[in-house]
Image 1: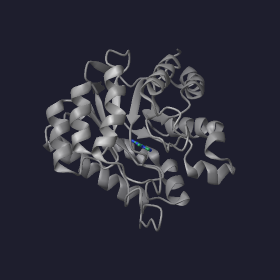
Image 2: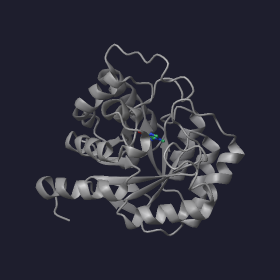
Image 3: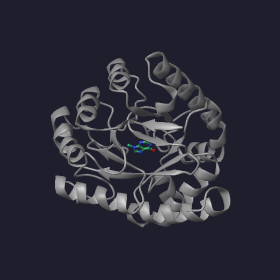
Image 4: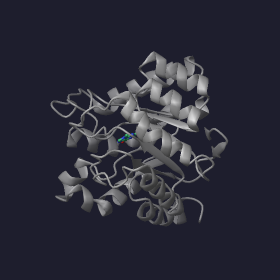
Length: 275
Ligand code: 9MG
């Protein structure tokens, strides 16, 4: 069971989280969704396409991305979250800044997607007090330097140990288990070999006992495997999402909601409920 405010998911089928980047440098939309109205129209389209959750972000976390100021990030995301109040699906805020979390929750966000896994004490207490769900993601380094020299003795074991410790910290801070999601953080301080090992062994992370999110959509590992630019990675992204689900992911974070939902209908027909 996963609780996102008034939204409850029994996880009998995989969920699709649709990505809305409110950033001018988004690697996919090149800033098309920069303006509030365009971002909201994009979110509404993703909901119509079958997204179960919408993830709104105002600061790119792709390798080499430059940080944005607190005010700039607030100006980007808050109008979109406020505009989506009352939507038919829960809203997630993709941020690692505690103040953005606080204001996004006040504006109606049901979930915090933190690439920093609530390692900031202020973030931990804001999520606990806000009674929202959280996605705790693993990364090594930060977006500015994370791909320079990723190193692990045992990537699957180390990512699992980190996520176990973050679940414990979240629970100790008062975040109920049914509000916690974990994520190995594909592409965040990982080589292609690390990413493939994590995907191959994803099932091991299900032993941590909370829902598992996988974000592979259009990532450079898919470019490395297919030779395709980001805008041409939809087929590889759908394949990767299906593999992640096959190996235990409960939620896939994707750009191409319609195509992923269609792919998952085939998966559901033989593995779960028929939609
Ligand atoms: C913000 N963001 C970019 N990639 C991501 C991923 O793989 N997982 C999560 N939770 N967030 C991501």
